[in-house]
Length: 248
Length: 375
Ligand SMILES: Nc1ncnc2c1ncn2[C@@H]1O[C@H](COP(=O)(O)OP(=O)(O)OP(=O)(O)O)[C@@H](O)[C@H]1O
Ligand SMILES: [Mg+2]
Image (cartoon, rainbow over all chains, first blue to last red; front, side, top):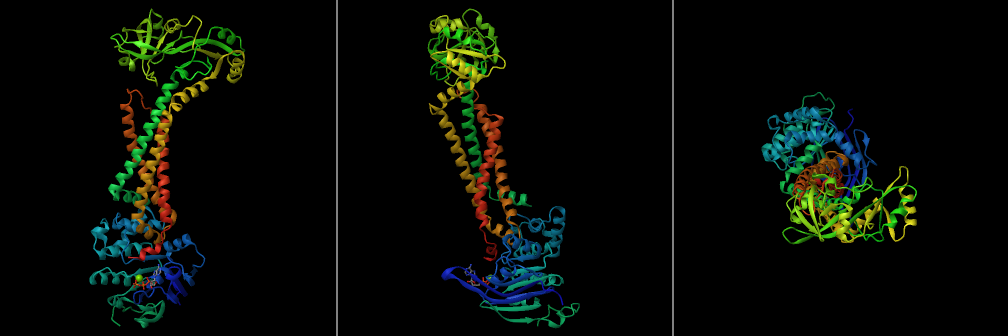
């Protein structure tokens, strides 16, 4: 049995204060296993982004327990959480969040720099990451000179350059057209073949479903259902041929 | 990458960069000019005192400055010479007197009468003639930069001081006068004659100490033995002259106030631009934080941005300040730049930028990395 990348139990999150206080998560249990691409689906306001932020150690839960690679996050301060993020977690945002004054290569290098990878080692790894997302020919472009799909691929390269165990993406395709959205999802599902990595993507978009190994449904702050797309091929035997691009 | 990011953030918004640099430049130039004027004024005011080879000055009671001191009589000299620790006591005469130009018209000058003893004052920085030339008949030594004020062309020209005919036999360069009344050097006898002093009268006695004698002890002994006079150390007389010309007239307060104002305005401009730059890049800083950067990493970006501004601003500001200083060389009040002032201005620039960075850092400390998910 592989050890989970992430384990969350009884997560409750209250947002806002006083009368405006919202209980965005009402007791969520979720486990992410290596080698899986999980899609988190649910209506607007159901708590997807909140859950993703907690899994990514950006928000701390009001109640409940979270462990990344078996390490509990309880009692960690902001700096310790930041260290956990830079060591183990990669993020892809809906609006890319690239640095407009840096080239594609520099954007990826900056992500590595934060992790303490500098110099030519960083350049090589950044180049490799950009090549793996199909942007070897766009290294020197600034974000404004890249299409939305290309920008999101730079963001994916930045997220994976440090080989994080956990990759979290909040609606990575929402700002993209169908074709670019498909390309980014294909990239994520490709990355999920790495047996040491778990990927979770929040999505609204039904066209992303074919790429998932597993789909988790959330409504009103609670997990209300879960489907495994190709249960037989996934586990146990990890060496079984994958067929996740086949429609369920 | 921190440097790259700081650099790009800085150059990303050119207009803001220009505003930042103008702010720093403005401060540096203003502070350099104000403090440079102060140093220039100071040098002019204490020039005579610093160049006189004496440890103690005996002055009439309540002497305000080198140019404005009452007269002493000759008896004091013998008493002073008998005080233990005193090596020599030499008279020095100084007073405002009217200089009548050869072509008519008059201007105020400061007559400095000295026989150039070892423990006394002699003209320095001579560019024409020699100090001893003033012992020739009617001879005086004047300052090159004031030739125009004195209404003469140079060595060989004649004028009148009081009722005395004088002839310029030598020129100094750079002995400027804070009051703008040019200093004119001449022997004691000629100065006394111009001022209607008797043979024994003087304005100051310059006291030189014997080796090993301690100035404060001799000063007290002299003060006890002499009546109706004040005995000042060189430092005390210098401070008194500075206090008189710079502070009782308000000139020094204005100069230092101007320097403070320059610092304040510069700091506000730099702080404002750095803060607004940080605010503009807040999303990026939140992204950095979400990607797991330590807060120290983000602070380094901001501090480097401030340091780069400081570096560019200082280079520009000093260039302009030096141009202004060069241009002021022959004005009534030359501005002075010293290595100390240059270093002080650099420290000031760094201080301004550091203070400015503080506000930006405080802003960035409060960012919530969760804002990266907002759209
Ligand atoms: N800072 C906040 N203060 C108060 N309430 C908040 C805050 N952020 C989110 N909420 C509320 O928490 C709930 C969950 O929000 P969340 O952003 O997680 O939803 P979501 O599933 O990501 O929605 P969407 O699909 O629109 O992105 C919503 O009801 C939202 O209004
Ligand atoms: Mg959301």
